[in-house]
Image (tube, rainbow, N blue to C red; front, side):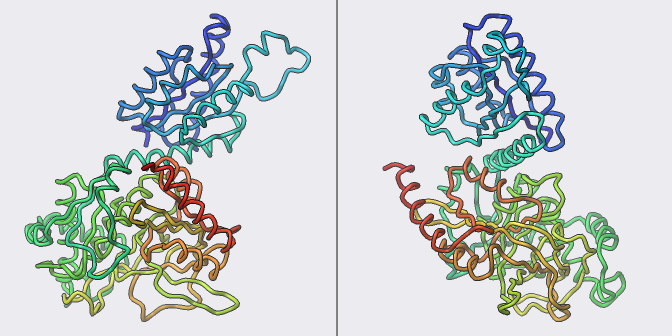
Amino acid sequence: MREVEVWLVPGSQAMYGDRILAAVKDHAEEIGRALDSSAAIPVRVVTKPVMVSAESIREICIDASRTPQCIGVIAWMHTFSPAKLWIAGLQALRKPMLHLHTQYNRDLPWGEIDMDFMNLNQSAHGDREFGFMETRLRIARKTVVGHWQDPDVAERIGTWARAAMGLHEGRNLKVARFGDNMRQVAVTEGDKVEAQIQLGLEVNTWPVNELADAVAASDEAAVDRELEAVLDEYRVVPDLLPGAPRHDALRDALRIQVGLESLLESGGFSAFTDSFEDLGALPQLPGLAVQRLMAKGYGFGGEGDWKTAVLVRLLKVMSEGLPGGTSFMEDYTYHLAAEDPRALGAHMLEVCPSITEDKPSCEIHPLWIGGKPDPVRLVFNATPGPAVGIGMLDLGTRFRFVLDELDVVPPLDDLPKLPVARAVWKPRPDMKTAAECWLSAGGPHHMALSTALRREHLEDFAEMAGIELAAIGADTRARDFRNELRWNQVYFHLAMGV
């Protein structure tokens, strides 16, 4: 993330004279250095010159829009900056914006305040002038209020920067689909053209036997290296160890990983899908391969679900460096006991080990789906803690994100007969309300589960992308949530125009 940057752009006006503008420049650079050195902000913060004219503002906004490593702009008015100066620039800006409402001094020097002090320290109303123009121009932005040295200010800027990194990744993301989505399934369908228009990502399909050919041509030395890593990183069951009866199945799984990764790297793909209904000449359903590639940062969606593959990749990019992980996940079955309901999430094979702190077990079991020999997979429980689950659906005229705040919890008992990776969680505010709201919003059965990110990261991302976010959390009430969906329907219909 330190390879990209956000620009701190301070605003003022020429009428204050050189002495005041020099102080604005010095203060902005000090603030920029502090933000750049904050551990809470994962990207670089670069301070730009003080903006005092419409021409310079327009130029800096155009420059930000065309500079690849710039992923967003932080605007701050140290003094009053007449908002008409900002019209052309804001209309030209194509990068996310954060409005920082702060001031250089934390405390007022009450006994020393004079008109020089008042002329210099005008953020309280300079930012209001700027905020009006943002609203008048309908600029999507995040507003952060507080002193620049306060930890929560840096935390919120860092959250926004991670969302901006997600949007930046989306605009450069390529998704490879090996086969189509599962037959007769509705929610995994979607408008790939509209996704490219709105998020910038490319989604295209490749024949599964092109993947099978790459697997067959896998470099055995690379397979050997992956085998060494597997033996080191996981608890491998005896049947899969070198020389054991089923070791060849483990090597087949690793050949899939090596061949698949080579195809993804050669095509510049950061996310992919497969389908158990279209395996071609593959030796087994990709399980271990998918899990290990997700752990490396790739996005994945099962059964051709490219929308979830996109989300998994974006959330992995946004959460880089944070504790926890992100995985493809399916809301599989419920424990509906009145006193302690919870959900059991899993999938056939493909759950990312980044969401566990335990050492996964590498095992082989029958699947009875896909018509191939038994696949190898990692088996583990997700580590307890707060999480978010987010799904993406196509409503025909637009996309919607549905998010639920979750608490991952331990299973109530061992699961010796369930040989897949899994996560057990309690949705907020409670099982019944969360499930009712998710269904009311049309939420999909696949989602990206992240134990690294929080709701605010996804709220910021949705705002930047111009996509509705229907969020379910501790304060959600089903009736209010349904009304919110109705209001959103009207808002987004009008916002899209005719």
